[in-house]
Length: 202
Image (cartoon, rainbow, N blue to C red; front, side, top):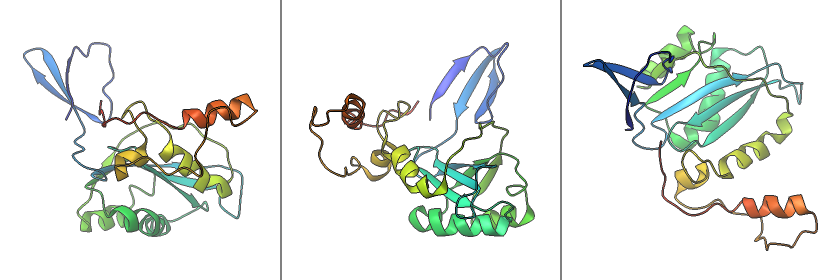
């Protein structure tokens, strides 16, 4: 757990930080994330163009490894439909997290959602976090998810894939520098090889 001392005058505390006052100073304690899938963050991206009758995305990101899942949904959706997508696409791979952080969307505050995860022993933490709208097509979601999980993240100093599975993500084929005559392709493919290092959690 990361512990920081700080003067909070003029600062707005984040939803993921607990404040403990001690002798005029503030002890900031980050969320506990002892192992992967102990805590996940959920949010919706809505009002997207229709693609195969899907126009929304449920984004689920593991707080420790930053590993993400992007689930296509059709708006309007019910808490039961969202829970079923979660079980089909996230639970089957990782089990239930110890806690889930989400905004106060009607789905996350519904009795069904609250009771389902209470019965599973998952603590639901509600916050108010702004996420900008994005545009995209759901047929690209698997590629977007793969790109996100296999790209270097500066906050953990490796890829979420490597943080979760303990090894670098497989590549489609080995790439030799200069093999592409298109400069941007050459730079992009070289940049996809992050340095091997241990997780540094900040």
